Image (cartoon, rainbow, N blue to C red; front, side, top):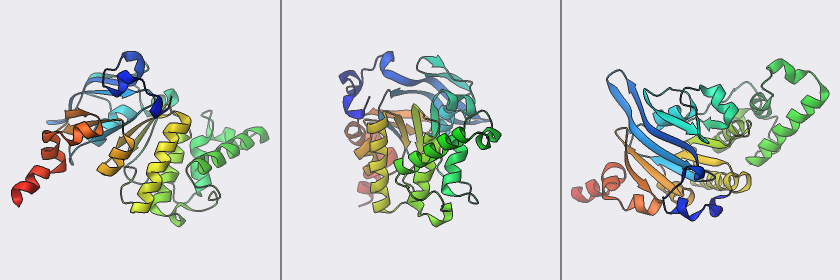
Length: 271
């Protein structure tokens, strides 16, 4: 299902469980006395692009860690297609179709771009299996080339990550996240540090992935232009709690969001 094919009940915010691929209810994360995520309900409609925004320290990346299995919640429940995945770790969630990229570039610098993707694309029967059997090697090689082409890096398999631009390095990371054929792709600030041209290419890539593969995408992003171009729904976190939820237009017009995140009222008061 593509973004333009979303049922009307999703577009209007009245979502039935059958329309939701991922659902969190009452998700909370404490680190000692710090309440980083506080009783968060978060819906991810099947086939959508949704965004999670908020000021620095709002709990966005922590919540992404909870969705991906990097962290376990202190309380609450997370389901994927109705199945409880709350206590599953990263590997088990990847196997069930949840994959992610990270805020900081996370590549093997001593391996080529192709070999970085190859490690992610190899069968989960163990790394040694990759080097046994001509058919298996050909299948993995074909998958590597397919992924590189998909993110705009066709022909770059032999290049080291350091030889790629910052934008291309981030696209290479997306290729790694796509290698497991995820149903849900979690992107943590995918345009951070990019030029305007690179940001435009990344927006086009994310839109194409959603449209052409049907993958459901969750984006943590600070660039409101990117959110406005891509997201069908936006959830705003502030101090670990949900402050607002709705379409980009609804959220952008919310006075609480303007105060906590956009800073428009603070700016006006300072004039």
